Length: 124
Image (tube, rainbow, N blue to C red; front, top):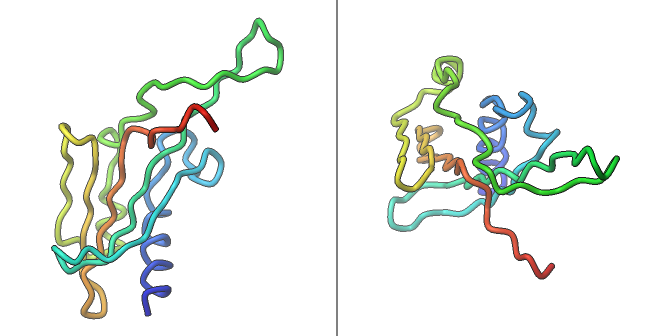
């Protein structure tokens, strides 16, 4: 059952347009699925990946930037609300995260979409 729920969360996540190019698959995101015992809901957490910008002086080389990637707040979520019966939709500027929740088949589901990329270990 949890595999079906994870797949449903990912399916709904893909309904949200990636602000960078409109396609999460192109630039990617890191996701983790879990069950939040405290709130009794299934959660898909999403962190965008850093964008690599071409450095013109190095030809085809790439350099990572740590800039804020995008502002999901600029996007219209009415299409998502039409496709999924949302119970709550919350943006925390302090935590830089969108929380989108709804109930399906008796289960509480929630997407937690972070606006800033996950910290990357520089030593890797």
